[in-house]
Length: 308
Image (cartoon, rainbow, N blue to C red; front, top):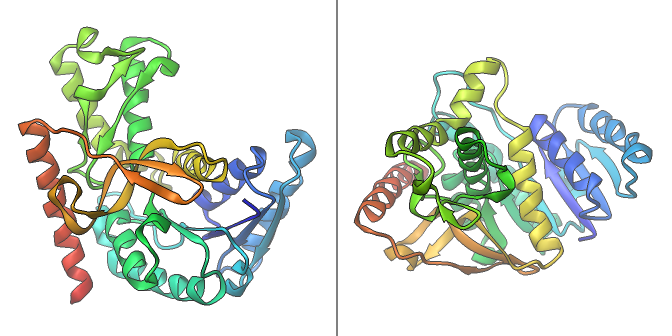
C-alpha cells in the first residue's frame, strides 16, 4: 500500500502507526486527530525511531480529515473508550456520531479506500460504516476476531506451558461477552487442546477470553488495551497489503452466511489485496450454533439502536 490513514491518535492509533511503520507495510502513514499537536507530535516521535528500527515509511500528523486524500486504507480508532464497569455498547451513541462524521469525509476525500473499524462497539459501528459509506462489503470490516483469538491463544499457551507459536485459536461472534471461542477448532501444533487441558481449564480460558478487554481495563484503571489491538490491526492490513490470502477472523457483513443477513459479525475471512475475498462458513455443532445465535441477537439489539 502507498498510504494508510489512522483517524484517532490515541494509544491504539499510535501503537498501530508504529507497527505499520516498523514493518514497512506502506509508504506513508497519516495520523489524524482533533487534538491540536497530538497527531503531529506522535508522528514525529515514531519517525525519529526510523534509524533504530530501520524503516523508510514516512509519518505525518494532521488535524484535518481532508489530509486522508489518496489513502488505500482508513483505520478508525477515534471515539471515547469505555471506563471500568462500562460495556462496549455503553459508548455507542457518542462513537456513532464520531464515526458518521469520519465516514462522510472518507467518501469525499478517499472514496477508493478500504475501511477498517476499530472503535467500539465494533460490530455495530462496522455495520453503520458499511451502510453510511455505500461501499461494497469486501471494503468495510472490523477488527475484533484477530484480537480475541490472540487472547485465547495466549491463555492456552499460559495454561499448557507450550510455545505460543504452536497454538492456533479461533473466536467468532460479536466482540463482547457473547463472543464464541471455538474450542473445538483450537489446537496445539495440530493437536486438539482437549488432549492437554481439562474441560474445567478450557471453560476458564473461554471465560477469560470473553473478559479479556475488561481484565486489562480493570488492571490499568485509566487505559484500555492498545498493544494487542494494534498488533491485530497491523496483521489484517499486512494480509491485504501483501495479498497473502490469509484466513483471519474479522467483523464482516454477512449475506446469508451462517443463516444471517443484514448484520456484521465476527467470522473467518480470506484477506487479500481486494479486502475480504471470501467469508468462510464453518460447520457449527448444536452448542456452537446456539452460542452464535445468542451473540447475533445481542448485536442485533445494538443495531436496532441505530434506527432510534
